[in-house]
Amino acid sequence: MCDAENITLFKAFSENLEVLKKAKKQLKKDLNSFLKKDNIISLRYYTFFYALMYSALMEASFKKLIFTPYGLSNNEIEQIISVSKTNISQAWIVCLEIALPKVYGPKNVSFLPNAKKRLKKLIDQNITKPYEIRNKIAHGQWSWATNKYLSKVNNETSRKLQSIDYIEVDKWFETCDLISHIMEMLIVSPKKGFTNNYWRTVSDIENKIYEMSSWTMEKKKEKMKSKQKSNGGF
Image (cartoon, rainbow, N blue to C red; front, side):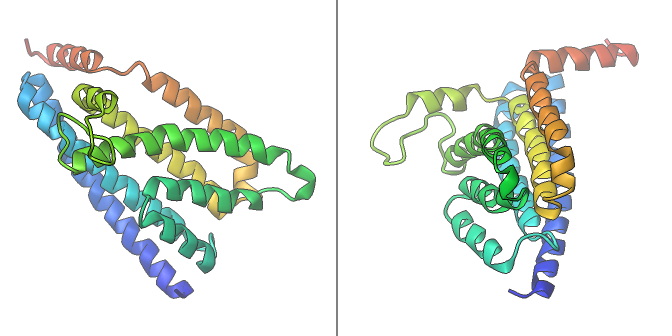
């Protein structure tokens, strides 16, 4: 790949991302409508579509990230793409491991283990785990999940599938956006933007994730009812 091709790919994935965001917005309107009408069956099915939408948006966001101009070298991009072909969530970790050492020189290496640990934890919990659930949905396991060898039912994953709701998927979208932002800072400006803003940004992300842990379908429904009443509804 040459630099011109990378810029073309960056623009392509940027446009893909914008289209996906518009599609996500429309799908969320449908989900809110189903929730308002207590249409449990449609809400359930569309939640799975929403989870698949998350996967598409997350992957487009990641591809845009790695092709960001003046960021990663061609060799680094190729390493990441090689991993992404079989495991897109692991590719985020590889991207982190490639970009993070550029932040500080040898005199400041004590910073790296902490940053790597915190960012890897964010990726593992908020990119990898949702992606594993999405894979089950994409492979037709909408009620019961199996292990990767298809030799038996995985009861723990099945419970996650059966309990997932669209508010949970909303959290995935929000967190992916936050992690993409800090990774972009790392790639584009490792010695200035990332260095100057790391502590505040990663703390903001962790605080937002904690705040989102209180988001529930019940609270969403109550909020919608309250808004409807204030607008003259029932």
